[in-house]
Length: 389
Image 1: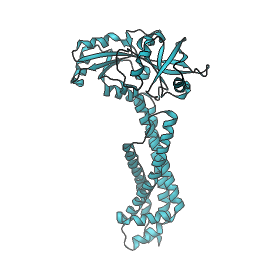
Image 2: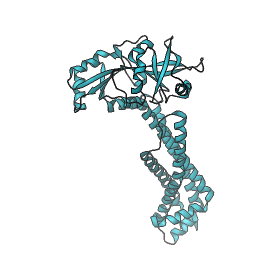
Image 3: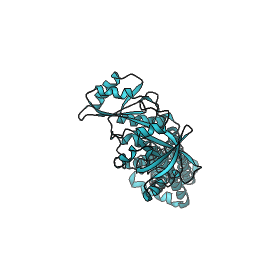
Image 4: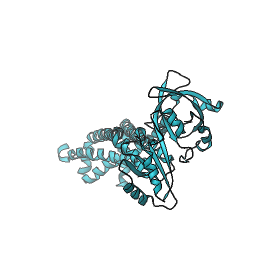
């Protein structure tokens, strides 16, 4: 088969304009697939940034909580009940809620921002900027701002680097409150969160009036070294009432990703986008190969007449489809890499080219072109020397 590749290449080069159209079609399809898969993975990765930053082994959430952006409350009694186990080193409650932020540079502009509260005595976040700013959060109405938040919140980072504090207003359920931004930390945005604030649990209660210290959104459980997490999880599930879920860190991450994939239309949309891209690519390559075969039907019949087997002609068409996939993939991946960088800078989402995705899209492109070749091969049955001559 590989010895016959030059013949297939020469046939493709014979119509250079047609070859360019085929390569542009394949490259366009490759870009579509890369962008759909990249955005989908960026969605999943960004949605669990908060989860990955937590220094815990097991976690409690309400049975009614579908995801981080819609966490329901549950009693902190459930969290402190876990201290009955000798395997537990410490526990820490976490409070989360969306509030509204007023842009201090545009007083008429309000935007939702994600507020995170925790007990300052618990070192539960592995995030740059948190540990060095803990003392600042001990004062009332002091918060940290996520330096990776979207620009719509104002030039907070630039202003903080020029002065010590920024004062602005936040609003929750119609109640306005003045807060001071006293430092920066790094977390990042997601499809559901455009910006983040971090503060103490006491400041959180001052801002979210209907929240109490005993009503939490997430319970972090840190186990002592050497404890089997899976075995402890099973014991804890049997011990606690069924109004809370007990999850390991991996399960908490999977729980969040599963919500975005199955609980919303986004997972379906991205999968459909990949499928539609492949269909478009199959149609484009099929049209090119079919036209090529139709125009050279007499040549194929001549080859049959002088003794070439039908299998030889089939291989030639499949070789053409393989060459089209290879030549179209290279510019496609280059363009996709440039679009990844542009998208990352524009949206702050963690979208980047990975080796596994590059291989995955390459094989999808190869399969796509093979399907086109197999479909176009049916035209070769018309290459009957007896009928043409």
